[in-house]
Image (cartoon, rainbow, N blue to C red; front, side):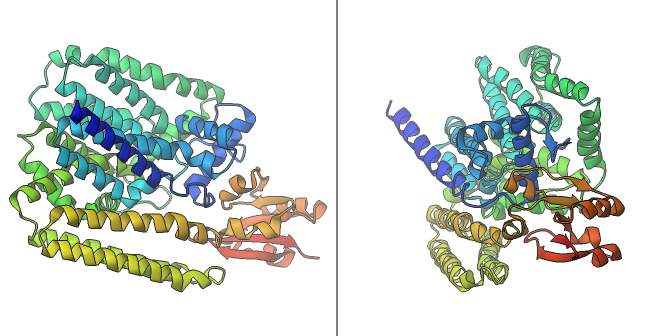
Length: 529
């Protein structure tokens, strides 16, 4: 009874801390990055037009399936069409998952591993940041990882049938969140894990209700895909399955490619700061793979997810995030071994701590560089100084507890340092950087003005101004329109009008600002008098 009360009390603390981290200022800075802009605007248009076909700027959007749009629409209904509405449920399920993750570890490992593993996860800036974004990944990651935890629950306790059916239900929902990759990854993970455990036989089909489970997955995920196929005369199917799944795997998409080592760099960042201990965690998992089923399961998931996206031609940081909770389990198990055998001061651990120190020191430097814009330069020294003091204090305690061979306080000092840096970024850095994004600066230029688009533009304009834009792709077509509508402003990008003399002769540039994190400039043109 006392243990149950203690577990419930700690789970509540985990939920409160995770909620504080995941909800940190999600309402306080505008939607400006490309993926957030397109996904949140698509949800707004779907709600406005009362349909289940994703559109962006009133044009079919085939990038992602339905699920996250529904959550965003619900957020808009409750909180209004704004940043909080778009991001709320992503943050909520992030906090919920980290609580479930803690309870799962309490059930299947020691209290020490549960505490460390959860703390490692909550300390990881890029992991927490994912739940600040109005994109499908928070839903996909949480649902898919939860499905794998449910499978392991059933594997350990076959009498708990609810976990088996939850596994299939969640895989079906994950398919609605991101696509058939959820089925492929889950099937491969289960297959390899059972092969590793030497339990693969024909009896597996009955034990795991594979046929009925597969039907359940399809009943949940397929109807909307079939409906949207006929609703769009096959256009959604071609765009989503052929371009955004098969083609992304076979070819580099939008310049997001690179060698397989980039995927490992993304994994390290995904769990950073404790991502610096991933090599030790994986080595620990390999050593104990035959003695501990949870370690073996976590190792299989880590290898499958990282391996799959290492061979994918398109590589993005968010692709490998479903592996992060399970790598956190491996790192926590490694720390537990270090604590037991008192082996903190080794060359590999010194390297990991050195990497953490270097990246931590780079944060104030990055802030100093990013805040050189004249609109926010008055904050440059102050924010650089604040972040530098936080980093120096954190590194002091990290060094202090390393010298004292106190692993628990060393882990605590690293985690608190990066949680604090995360709060600084969410509450001070992002809101101020957003003020120099073109979509925010342009408000004074295009307010109460009619605007059209030539060729290409920053998609954040749709969500921030809550409108769709008429788009022209032919120069002469635009000029003909402007001749009869001379007061209309033209929104575009520099790369769309470079080396086209017709724009220099017919228009004045009244706005020209670079994107903070993208390699283009937003241009606004007005017809010459």
